[in-house]
Image (cartoon, rainbow, N blue to C red; front, top):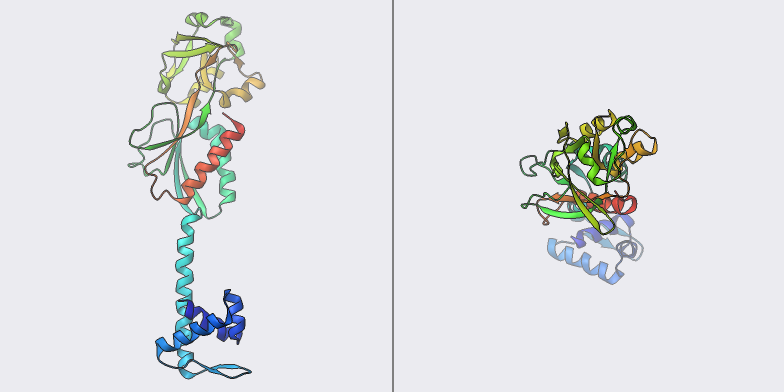
Length: 292
């Protein structure tokens, strides 16, 4: 193959020396490749004089074949190189609240960096089956992970207890976790809805979270809180803007809920697509930079 490249470059540049320079080899090495090609074809390919090179009739035929060989070799190299460059379709699944608040804009920036890539994003709080749903990467918040998948921790997300100002004006503001027993606690079924773990310094407590509304959908839970139905524990990234605008109010700010890990799941470490590797790295860097 190298001999074919030397032959093509020599003809196109009309100089063995110029061909050698273009291919990063010595003139002597280039000459040896040309001699090897002539030995392999069993015929002279070039007329050589001190001033010029010209093709023999056999050389004209071999030149076309050599160009085709070089083209095929370049195509094969490009195809192999694509394995290290993000491209193609990547199927990603993630919780709805994470998609709404963080992932959608993050993926938009990621796609700008990799224009040959497309993403099929499945937003759902339902744990997906990576095999049946043909998912390349699944992002999960919480500790319930599929043992059949590789789980790589991206970081942690903090949570905040919050309620609407109208609810707190009517029902009062809790001063201690024990006060939650007399309030309407709205719960998310995927995180052990009936029990909240809170800590203040070295003091940790468990609170029974009982109330009129529970859901497995975080956007619905946030909407219920905004409507004044009760107090809920929600990811901090999903409510910090609402708290800053006074649409919601933090409850028991001196007591922190237990943080939840964020993992990315995939089926195998072997032959992980370049697009998946690039997105995992991008997610790690974004979470480390902005926290959750």
